[in-house]
Image 1: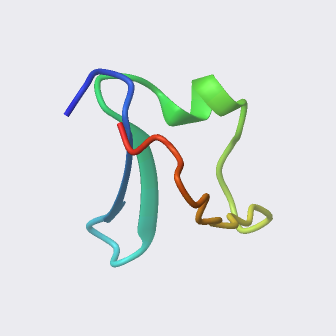
Image 2: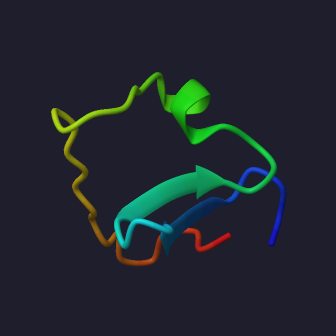
Length: 50
């Protein structure tokens, strides 16, 4: 997996988590923590999968 690639995984609290390979998702996208955040996922047909 290339450095900086996005990762979605289930963390130790059985919650969906977002990360960047060898980076900080929170820093890169200027997000914090808490229940006030939401994430939407969109499939982009023909998009780059790297």
